[in-house]
Length: 305
Image (cartoon, rainbow, N blue to C red; front, side, top):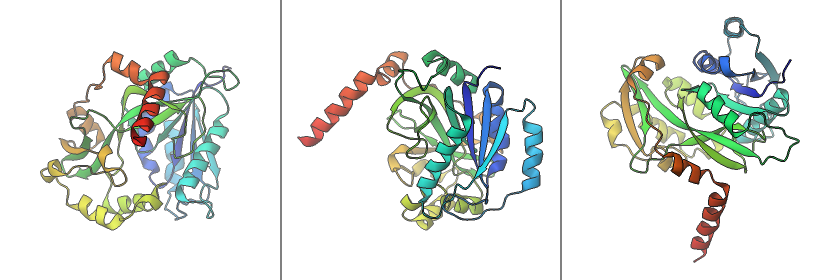
């Protein structure tokens, strides 16, 4: 039996039912999948959450015909660690559970790949089978988020980009699974042209409050109540007037848009998936390590002047 090359890990918690939308989008093209769950059913902040065990087991029995999925339970909510430290720890332990070698891909329950088959082929072109004992340089491969920030009766409010033409992106795959800040680390970030729909804030009010009190960046969120009140009044009309909406780094959510769709599948039918804004040449320049090193050095020179 061949060793798995494309290893997919999901951090599973109170919102596990979102896996019903995220897992089918990657299942066929993953070699192995790991669901990691806190054994005490606590969040990274140490808050207990409801978890329908029987419904989860029923879901597992229907979603895994090829027996690719392993469920890994451990203590991921250590009280002596901060939320982000527990986040990091769970991701690193899940990577160890999946074993050395290959591409490690971590996806959250509320993230839906729009073309995972294409992403797998893209990774194969970079390296068909990363070997941790080889001399290859560590690399993260990032995808572009299309983030949904609110579900209203007939559609979704989502993050749009302005004239800067830059999407928020996140490392999804790596040949060196060492996680220092959620999925981020100090390795080179290679930007891919693939998109992931992120149902980040498009929750009911109670669930959103639970999320912003439980996520890894809980301690960085200065005024949850004020942001929550702003989120409450967003609608299909006034969203166009809101700028720099991200609660931690405003500029990464520059503008808001609206698209009809009573559920994710309807949204995707109505939503025109954007073309990746960079040409092949521009993307090649951006992903050139020497060019990235030069820009980093140059920016430091400018700051010292």
